[in-house]
Image 1 (cartoon, helix red, strand yellow):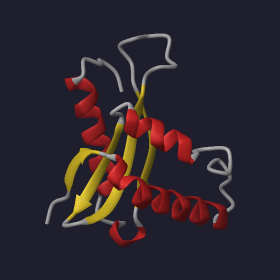
Image 2: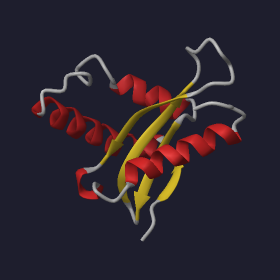
Image 3: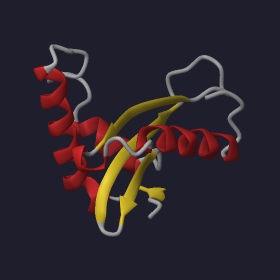
Length: 116
């Protein structure tokens, strides 16, 4: 079965936050501290959703992955950054992170960005 990729909505918010907390806990257990209390925040996720820059992968009704694009802080308008890519533990080892990256890159190109 293939995942469905779509824009995230505020209806997805609680599931995304649960995935965020799981991801932070897993990274912390591996002594990887680049995701911590300060990054990414719940407010960042909400802003991603509000600005239509948040995307989810869904299997049936389960949120499987999340990813976002960012372009507002870049000097070159034709560039976009792929960020906050997370995969649910239930859906790991299926190539879903790579599929999310491909989806984000294709979406960026559709939106007129030349580099992701």
